[in-house]
Length: 364
Ligand SMILES: Cc1ncc(COP(=O)(O)O)c(C=O)c1O
Image (cartoon, rainbow, N blue to C red):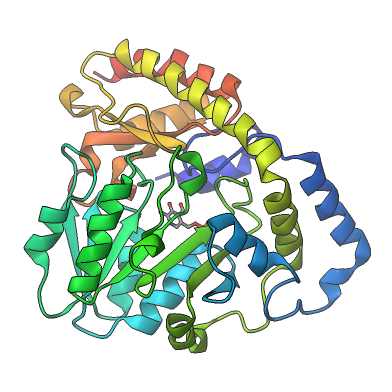
């Protein structure tokens, strides 16, 4: 069996990358210049300052509108490491970890490393996200953490301000920690913050991979109120700090984001409309969530009887278009859908749109 990632990386420049929700749109020149400048300076010969390059933590807090006195930032090599640190530090064996299915499953596996009990609530139905009533059905004495991925990978839904408020109140009433994974936050019109309602119980997993297009630079952050950060710091695996090129680029990205990010959003909006039109031409396929509140959504193909893994394989190996079968992000519903991300140049999306109805007809 072909390893799809090995195959795609070996042909990196020929592939239409719709498989990882990465942002493959051109990078702002100021960020590129900073990367080059940092290489030329030779700063990479030193361990970076352990608290992160000067100004970066403050810029992250400013981006989130959080108080510099009350909140702390730990820069990590990606949001995934922030999630690893927080699950390791704060979950005890037998603690309840409440999450959804579909979801970004690597986080659930991290919770399992602490021998937590993971509840994957089924959300492959309206409203395509967790509801308060659903979460209440699994609450018990051992419930410890609620994972709110917002917007949600892979479905593209996001939580309203009132929903975030209700989850926050539930967290306070039941002494839960609210892990607000805001990896895709910038893509949504109205991002909401759990810390507005449950400031002592909210922990953020923050990423530069998606909005800023830095997936390969590996940089993100753990953001938490001081008391919680104190408990998590001993589990920091990056006491020698994080890649200096990534940190320098991240700082410039935050300083310049208001200039270039609206352009990214505009392309995403256009691309997802193109995909919607293509899906409408494919019998038995539909988009459960449209428009998506982020840079991806899923295409339900369950009525076609075609295995999503076969769609992934044929699109990649025959045409160089890399989408993802649902199994990666869902234990219970993976056979129903493929996930496509669209923060890529429109020419790639057009290639997908041309292919998709044809391939579905061929495979039927
Ligand atoms: C919901 C979610 N959280 C965290 C991550 C990890 O992102 P990072 O690249 O910052 O480690 C991803 C990556 O796809 C994700 O989808």
